[in-house]
Length: 297
Image 1 (spheres, rainbow, N blue to C red):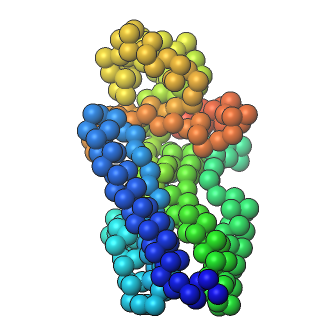
Image 2: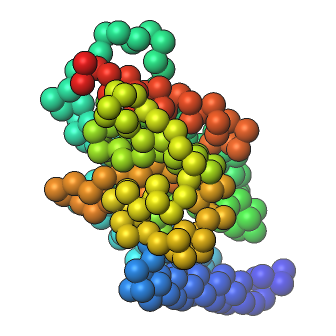
Image 3: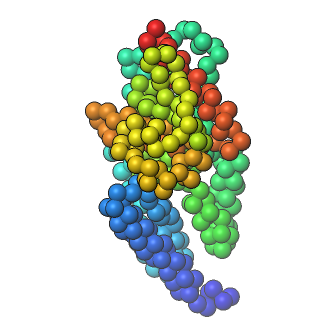
């Protein structure tokens, strides 16, 4: 009865929330650009699709249905289409071809060396998404706008995570393929071969290839060791002390500078549970060492 007496109250409230989300997304992009202009690679993530879905719902339940078309003001929807049909940077198969091109995996140790994989999506995530989607559809079909709204909004929040923004990591005899959520870039996938790896950093230890011994050597992490890496070129003791706590408590792979890009420092620990990091580190070192032996000897 209250809703029928005031047909514009609920649409205005939901539409206002949608506009607020649009403003937050724009502010996130502006702030991210300011941070990255200072040399940082950090970003502030917005909330894709939420602004548009609120405006869509507000229009559909309002007396003037065409107002639902205002949902196209949500630029994250258009960014999503760009990522799929134009950029296609998230396509794992394309990056896999770059890894495998011109390289044959060694037959030796092929059975004992298993790929290291991790994905940010679990079965429970998919089940929750499907359940929310079912409740939302049932709510709209039955005319229960509140149920459709309460179930539909969380489903929309999960959608980017389940599709293009979820973290993904794979290491095998070819190299490393990974994807990390990156603001409005929808988690574009990156890859590099083992020959591009400069070092592996785990806790306060650094692992590098010792060409004289033909093996991977382990040494204590310090400013001198970091300064020899492309990603930390010119690292001083003062700089090392500033980032010591951050670098010594993590799991990283340092990538050499190559023709098509600058040196990188990839954080691997965030892909796995803390208790698995040491085991994963040993497995990744084995893959790297196997590549080294198969290409040098």
